[in-house]
Length: 142
Image (cartoon, rainbow, N blue to C red; front, side):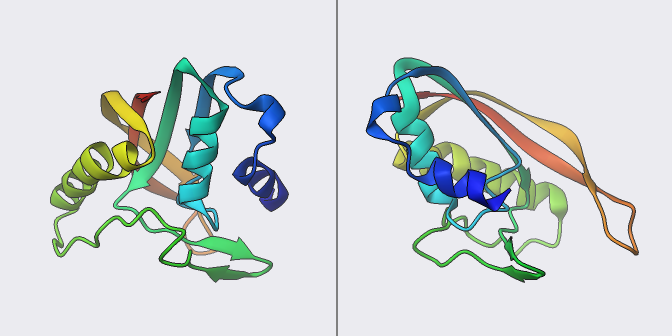
């Protein structure tokens, strides 16, 4: 699984601008270099292409390195500010706004439409599944 993400981090020049549509669904919060994944998606898209991006919010980035978890380094992550709000609704809205106005434009995307959708994620030994709120956005490269 991790090797797929690593390969996506450095697309070959032969595939640049080749795709009309790229989807990144619930990946950027669980990979070592989420910013690189967005840059790669941008380079793979045709100028009139579309990006479909989904990630659970509030954003809690970590990835698996063998049996352990690790956090992306500051220069590799999406730089979403931690929210001080204990209110999940407020935190979701604050980070959604950051993605729309800061993160996506900084990576060469113009958000067109976004929504909030429920997302059930597999859990662990204590919790069979997690009920999360996904931020889903359709964006164009600029």
